[in-house]
Image 1 (cartoon, rainbow, N blue to C red):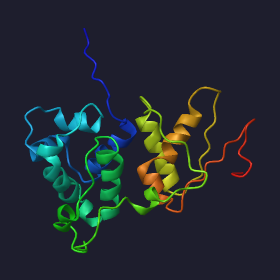
Image 2 (image 1 turned 180 degrees about the horizontal axis):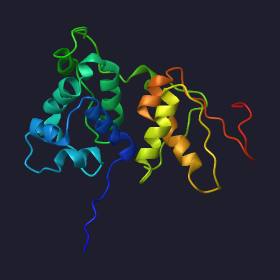
Image 3 (image 1 turned 90 degrees about the vertical axis):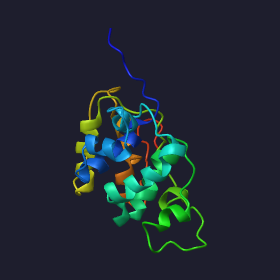
Length: 200
C-alpha cells in the first residue's frame, strides 16, 4: 500500500525555497547537513509543503540559511518577501525583528520596526484574486511561463474551458518573483460575460 504525504501548506509558495536553493547551487543534502537534521526528508518536506520547521528550535538557523546559504544577504527584499509569504503566511511564524536582521544587514536602524515589504503592504486596485489552493503537477509549466514573463516575452494562455487557464493565470499573478519583477503592480481585468470594464 502506497503511503501519500499530506500537503499542509501552499506548494506554490514553499516551492520558492527550492528555486532559491537551486539558484544558490545548494543541494537538498547540503541543506539537510546545515540544519543538522537526521531525517533525510526534513528539508524537502518543508519545500514541498508537507511540514514546517519548529520556530523555537529552527528560527535563528533558518534566518542564517536564507541570508548566508541562499545568499539573500545580497537581496534583503527577497529575504523579507520569503519571510512574509512563506514563513509568516504559511508557517505562521512571527515577524522578523531588527536584531535578527542586523547581523546580516548593516543598514538596519536601531529604532526600526518590523515591516511588511512595501509592494505587499500597499493596497492594489484591481489586484488578482488570492490563491485558493496550490496547483498539483504544474510546477514545470509554471516555471516555463514565469521565465517567459521575466524575460520580456508575450504570453497568451489558450485552451478548452475548464482546463485551468484562469488557475494558472492566478498562480502567476501571485507569484513572488513575478510580483517583484512587475513592481508597479499586476492589473487583473476579468473578461467574458461579466467583464471588468474598468480593468479593460
